[in-house]
Length: 274
Image (cartoon, rainbow, N blue to C red):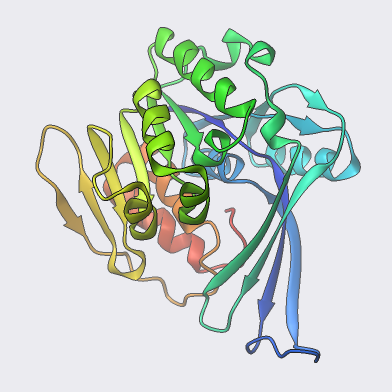
């Protein structure tokens, strides 16, 4: 299975707290820095799970961008996309004692990807084009995502879209996002409960996966009726960052069972990547 993932390539700063943050005081923590970005994480997990992975996105030429790109390539991902001026984005994830996370996201050059910068060869040979929903929330990347869908579909690929963030859906406008999804025509949609509620309940795709956290997932794989799959219990929940990205990659590579297995592997370690 070959998966092309379109979206952001950033640096993740993961701050694992030993106890809740205290105002105006020091809180003990363990901090790590690694490559991140939803689409880049999905590509990394695809490669780890035995698929072929290609990332497409705009990359800044700064030291952070070089570091993030090299980290992705070391994981076996082909990195494509035009270089950009400006700066690489940084996402700070605060991970609480129980594994819960709060994220502060700076996307940097990611939203600057333009339709005219895409090359058809990037989408040739792909079974799936995965589009991070973050690419739909700002121009010109939203137009590039639609153009990438057309190129991928012309090459025989199916389209998967992740809704990505309920707060951004609300700010962007659920009706506006639904119109974009109709234009994209995804075969598969990934969403959690908050994202489903933000877009208005019914998920606009023939097949979808509703992520329910520790309760597992509901799968609708057309033409079959929906079914629930419990989460694969990890030995210990360390960090939930990236669990949805691992799940999406697992499904694209091997279906529902591998999806839940990959998500369980992800939460057993700190950070969003294998």
